[in-house]
Amino acid sequence: MKIKGDRCFYLFLSVFLITFCGCSSSQSESPSAKSKHKEVTKTFQEHKEAGTGFNSCTLLTEADIHEFFPNAIIKITKQGNMSNEALGSRVCFYELSEDDMVFVQTIIYRTADMAQDLKDQGRTVEENYLLNKKYVDNLSPVKGIGKDAYFGGIGLKAFGGLNVLIDADHALNVTVGLGRGNDDINAHLKIEKVLAQKMMSRL
Image 1 (spheres, rainbow, N blue to C red):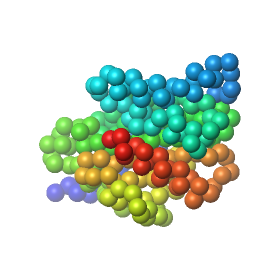
Image 2 (image 1 turned 90 degrees about the horizontal axis):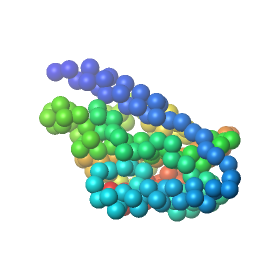
Image 3 (image 1 turned 180 degrees about the horizontal axis):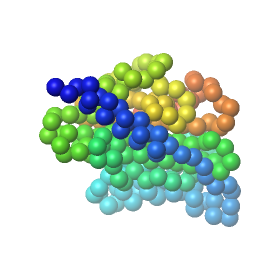
Image 4 (image 1 turned 45 degrees about the vertical axis):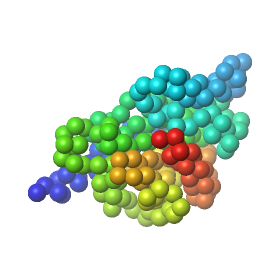
């Protein structure tokens, strides 16, 4: 068996994926502000009308984000319509500020999106989640959501934010930025937990 090799390989892919996809910025108020406020809602509606495919950005709406960031102009800079074939992950990034680190990033993991050879081996999202969890430093268990959940710290880093195992074939990560210098863990986690619950209700 090549368990150690497999673990290192998938850990590397996880770290690369999450680190590579993290980014942030946005745009300030402008004459077109009202239309930009509706960008997330429009994406959600278009997906429902199409009835095909899957875009992870549809799992949150404009209203969901404005509940915690009422004055933000939402700009989706990374759409979740494409998956990382190896681990079956889809990243969506919502920029909420041009001048500060204010953002929402979501990652959805689905066994259905994983590489076929891994699925043929019987590998699932749950197996990847539990394996990755072993390598997270100073994680904090989070109760009351999903089959298992933990907080991996503030910021766009591997396993940062709220990580939730939903079931054998689905997991998600929600990471929010509340601005430079804001290191209030409870404030971050409170928002991430509510947004994660909203996403889970739509999967």
